[in-house]
Length: 388
Image (cartoon, rainbow, N blue to C red; front, side):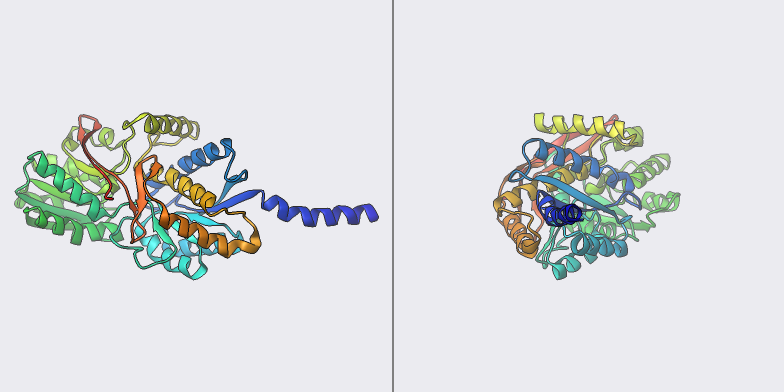
């Protein structure tokens, strides 16, 4: 009986010590849902980062670990997952969520709890500017598309007239179609001659393309996902519309050039990750591909949202070191805030995507790589350095 009691006492006191030997993050994944072609592989990138950090000794000698919750990219499920990770699992900070619709509800919830969240894909302008704990490792789509228009001008590409085609049932795509494209095209001196919209899951875009063809334009700004880019480009060429598709970062799928075929030649979009940029990006891309193949993933090349997820883990590890985070449950609120404050001080961090800092609106300031589809591959047209 005495020996049993001793074992029980030992177990009770050993458990907190074991918990404090790790630093635990939460991860609001989107393993299912409308963005799955872009989001499903993000966790591969997070695992690469965690494995590299732990192999190098961890953070202050402590291993890094994360706990996942699949939101299915659903805003309601996102809040449920955030509260579960923050209140039940007591995580120090949270990777994700993915989309702007999710961030709209996650940001106020994170502020109420006092835990940092950091999105890897949300890019609706100024979405987290007024929150204390919500960050985005993404660049504002307006900031990015402005670089697209600058590149078009610097290369003297035809751009006298433009049209806009966008999905009207998604937050960021609606913002792109109604505000970002029209505003920045007008700023660049391009005349907007037509606007059409459709549902995100639309299968047939022939009616919309007929409207576009009735008022032909040099550019067609497309606010939608890669799958829709394929449909739109193919239908435009079938109907004889010669305009160049330009878009935001949501279509920056590394496999889009192969999927879209020759009909997509000339398509231009911005990205914050170009896999063939340097030795560091090529090394990450090779490891990502190895793991994606082993997991049987349909897409095996890393996209910008995978790179952004990898970098989020690096930012958190850096912030934990800067803040001397211990993982002590009694200091949870204090250490969560210390992580936030360290991130706000971060300047020119040597991330996978380039030198990264956080601006006053809690969005990452990073380089923009403007790329064009040419015969089955993305070609880098121009690099725009991050603002100081």
